Each structure stands twice: as structure tokens, then as C-alpha cells.
Amino acid sequence: MKANRQRGFSLLEILIAFSILALSLGILLKIFSAGVNTAGVAEEYNEAGQIAESLMAQTGVETALRPNEATGLEKGKYRWRVSVSPFQFTAENLDVNAITAVLFKVKVTVNWGDDNADGRQVELVTLKLVNKEL
Image 1 (cartoon, rainbow, N blue to C red):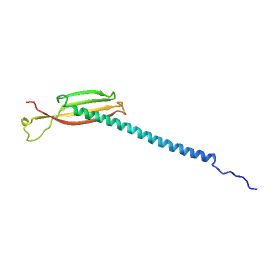
Image 2 (image 1 turned 90 degrees about the vertical axis):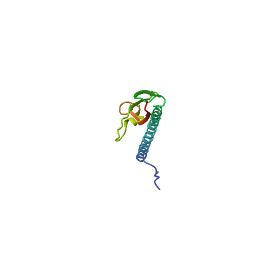
Image 3 (image 1 turned 30 degrees about the horizontal axis):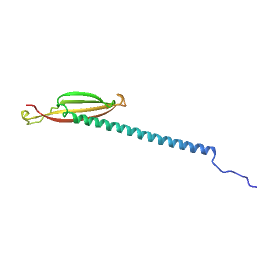
Image 4 (image 1 turned 30 degrees about the vertical axis):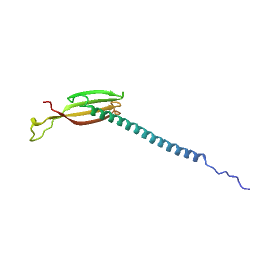
């Protein structure tokens, strides 16, 4: 008479398989969550960049370009600062009286998040030319 031996997985084999499955799922979920977080941060940078570009385009168009500083809040989240200052340049063999334009340095900074480690910032700087008033 033959002994009836059933073949199957032992409890130890099943526990090891479930442990490997749980570890793999944990790693996959962590990767997915990091990707979602990165996409959110990229969206915030994109929005802050659009705000900064808009403020840069408005400077000197809606108001006269002169040395000043303005601040504000956009969408309840993004704090911005626009700073306009005269830009001094030097050039040899240049007749200062012949210059009919003035350069201004325009700096736009947009901040959001905490002021601590999570604080993020976008900064744009350009030079704008204005006709000298006679």
C-alpha cells in the first residue's frame, strides 16, 4: 500500500512569498507617491513662473518705469516682490551727454511655501530701457 502524501506549499513558503509581495508593493507605492509629489511641485514652479513673467511684462507698461518696489499676494499662496532700480553701466570713450536712454534693472521674486526648508522661490531679472526725459 502506498502512503498518500499530499503535495503543497508549506506555511513557511507562503509567509516568505507574502513578505516579498508586501515589500515589493511598499517600494512601488513609495515610488508612485514620490512621482505624484514631484508633479505637484513642478506645477507650483510653473504657476510661480507664469506669475513672475506676467509681473515682469507689466512693469514699465502699466506704470512709468522708475525706481520703486512693490509687493503683493497672488492666489492666496504666492508672495511676490517687484524691485526696479537704476542700472549704472560704464563704457570707455562714451559721451554721457549723448545717451538718450536710461537702463533700469527689474527684479521679480515669487515665494511660496514655508519660510523654512520648504520655502520655494522663482526669481527673474532683466534690464529695461527707457527714453531719457529732456
